[in-house]
Length: 315
Image (cartoon, rainbow, N blue to C red):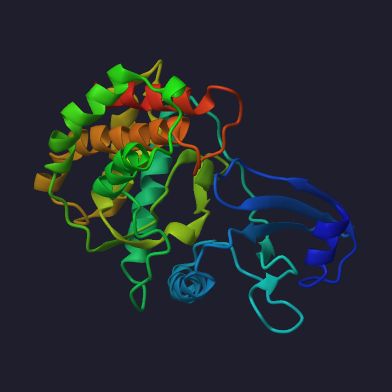
C-alpha cells in the first residue's frame, strides 16, 4: 500500500484510502485506487519491455478520435512534472487514469447484452478508422500465428521445455492443423482494438459504455477482432454457441455499415476457429515452457486453457 500510495502521489494530491489489485490482465500489474473524496482511479505498472513511446504515440491518436466521437476512454493523468509516465527506481513505468464507471459482465450474457456488445464493437471500429494517424504496434506479433508456432518449435530447438508436461496428442494436432490455419488470407490494414475480450468491455444500464485496455490498438484485421470478441463472449459448455454468436453479430451489423463485406463475413467461422487455435497454441507453449508469458494462476491452469481453446477450434 505504501509503495502504491507513493506512486499515486506523483499524479494526484488526494488522500488515498485504499489500493487493491484489480483485474486479471496477463501483462501489467493493475491497482484500483480509492481516495478520501470518493474518487476512483486505476494505477498501472507497465512491463519494462513495453515501448512507452509507442504507447504514448497511440494514446495521442485514439484520444483525439474518442474525444471527437464522445466515447469514454481511459484518460491518462500527467505527473507533477508534466509526464504521462512515472519511472521508479527499478525502472518500471507507471501510469494513472480516473476509473470509468461501469461494470464488466460475467458469462453467460443475455441476448440483449450480446446485441449491445456487437453494437459497441462496431462503434469502436468506426471510431478507430478515423484516427488522425497510424498507430505503432506495441505487440507486433499479435494474431501472428506463424510467430507463435515458431516460438513453440523453438522450445525444442533450444531445449527450454519441460518434457513431463508435454501432451503428444495436442502437439500432433498443432502440427497437423497449422497449414489449414495459416491458409486464411485477411485484410490486415484496418485499425483494431486488438484484444476486445469481455473483460475489456464496460457496460452501464445494459449498454456498452466503453472498451478499456487500449494498449493493443494497431493495424490488423477487423474480422479477427470481431472473431476474438465472439470467442470471448459466446462460448458455452466448451463449444461456440451459434445462437449467442448470432445475437452479437446482429448488433455488430446494425452499427457497422460497410466495414466488413459479405465476402469477408463468410470467412468468420474459419477465423473464429483460427483465433481459438492460436490461443490454444500460446497457452500450450507456455504450459511446457521454462519461461512463460501468461501467469499460471494455479497448477494446471495453462494446460486447462490450452485444451479448452483447442476444443473450441474443433467445432
